[in-house]
Each structure stands twice: as C-alpha cells, then as structure tokens.
Length: 100
Image (tube, rainbow, N blue to C red; front, top):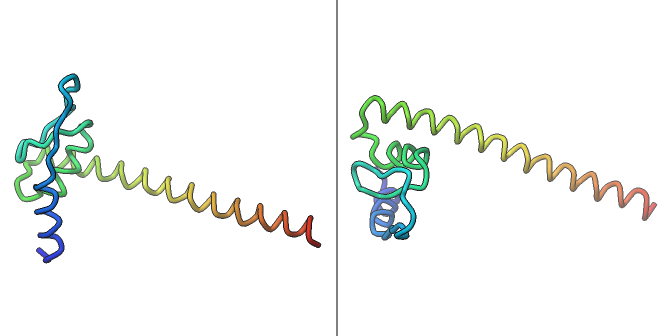
C-alpha cells in the first residue's frame, strides 16, 4: 500500500457521516457501518475499501457495480467529446460566415 493510499484511507475514516433522522439509508457497510444512499454505492465502497474481507456475493455485486460505473463514465466522456466538437464547429461556422 502506498503512502498516499494510507493517507487517503485515514482521511476517509476520519470523515464523520450521518444520516438525517427522517431518512433511512439504502445500505450500510457491514465492516465500518458507513451509511449509503444506494446499494450500488455501498457495493463500490466495499470493493474499494474492504476488498480482502469480501465474500463471493459481495465481490459479484462490486464487479457488477463497477461495470455499470465504467459504462456510465464512458457515455459521459462521449458526451464531453461531442460537446467539444460541437463547440469547435460552432466557432468555426461563425468565423467562416462572419469574418470572411
């Protein structure tokens, strides 16, 4: 484990988390009792922070959540690239028809 990773773990563990009285968390970490608003976020937390303690079911949930997150991140990146391309061609269009 790297020095930076140990520092991040200590920082994460020291962050106090609480849930408002009228809200019930969707899931809780069985190892550190941290509350999560969705089961997917809990599964990602388990795979990132408690990888060695996971059983088969928890590992499968983590892998599924990780695949879903990877797919969503890929779509997000495609949208960002499309926005850059549209902006570039928009400025080019304005330049060509107004200044030339």
